[in-house]
Amino acid sequence: MSTGASSEPSSAFARVAEAPWQRILGGWLDALAVERGLSGHTVAAYRADLTRLAEDLVMRGVDPLTARAPDLQRHVRDLRRRGVAPRSVARALAALRGFYDHLTTEGVRADNPAVHLVSPKLARPLPKVLDAAQIERLLAQPDVATPLGLRDKAMVELLYATGLRVSELLALRLGQLRPEQGFLLVFGKGKKERIVPVGDSAERWIERYLREARPALLDGRHDVVFVNRAGRPLSRQGFWKGLKAHGVAAGIDALSPHVLRHSFASHLLEHGADLRAVQTMLGHADIATTQIYTHIHQARLQALYERFHPRA
Image (cartoon, rainbow, N blue to C red; front, side, top):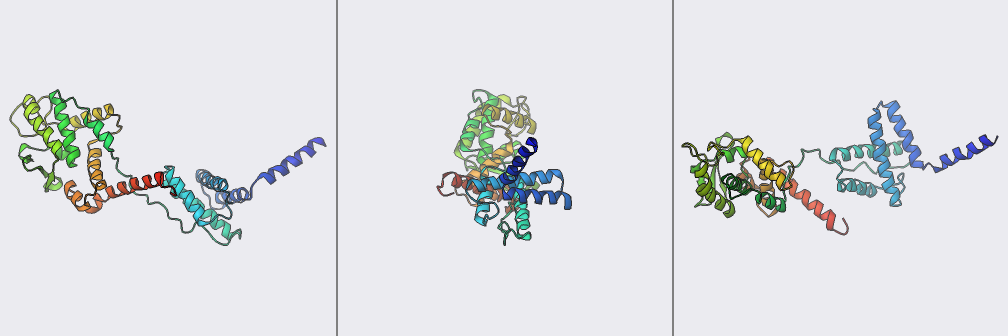
């Protein structure tokens, strides 16, 4: 008798302790598994997404069953601010819409507050871009007291100053340099010719490399600008290996020549350059390709806004 009497209050307490939203959510998820045949993995993901939502709402004093659209919008914005991946945010939105649609179908509420929530675009990942401090650390790595270090310094300076593709950099010939006019003549994809400005810093290091290092390395008669220790044209693999080593020394992971190209374009736009001008310098046939760098700029602005604005 005593055993049975003690078990009933415990069971009753469990029923009282379960919030209405938990009971309704559990029933909906069970229906998804049984009636719609969703996988256990998907149901578990929905459960985690909606439990996270409910906990966030309850912490703010909002009942998940009566939440309004602004409450859900704030939750989604918080997910993005926490760095939740766009695909995970899109899945969470699908769970929200489904759950609140279920509430309207069952007559728990009259409207679906999630119906107008906008899913994030599942675009290609934004290119990796170095910040100014990382660029400075990278440029400080080559030992310019040696011919190879001086060569590396000139190459990294030039790559960041012009946004050249690595193939264009390694194919440069002496006749393409126009130091007195401040630009390079570049032959890009499809042998298309374009003019790319070169800054003073890169020009100085190229001139020093040509004067001090290239003659010491050169073996044979060719006019390729950048050569290896044997005096032959530097290969893509050789440059990538050296750049990666300089990146590790500077504390930069996964560094590649294209990261410097991305950084060149992004930094230009951040400082007010015209998108068409950046397109021309990069040698993009379609401006849509260049527009990816405006997304990087917008993402940085959004992060700064959310970090520093008192009402973000």
